Image (cartoon, rainbow, N blue to C red):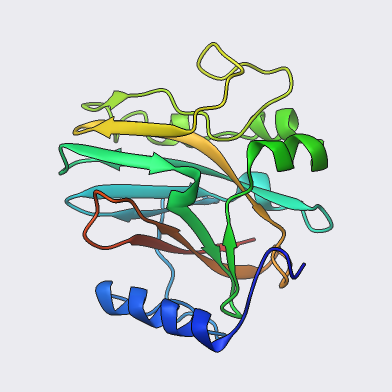
Length: 206
């Protein structure tokens, strides 16, 4: 697991710097006092004038024991001329302060066998159908599948340039946290060169 996370003083300083830019304190080894608002049994939302960020935990609930854990996400751009997204835009933080970068397509294809199964658990599209009715959906496929096409293709996209009033729905995978996944609380950070400060979601997996 050392390959995937580092829990050191320097990392904690980095977390503190990020927190100084945001309005709420990130998790630092203790349970958060509050979670973001829920859209459904499994979906949480952080909604702002610039960006709306949604994470759905349904695909993650039964993954304890797996090498990787999936989250379905949605990102809507309300206020920027362009929002640039890559796998490096997403970071998962567990209750102990460990930070996990998103898994790469090669890591998933070589070390995870449930890529197609996870897509069958997708539900965000139905949840945001009316909420994002005035927005345009753009193709995004940061994580691979084996047989199921996404937006008509199996090709993985390295970068998405999301214009204003556009949104994406996608799956992002992370190495299994040291804390496990079920009955745990997390933060999911979204960063981009186009954002003046990161956006983050506080959520739990039940």
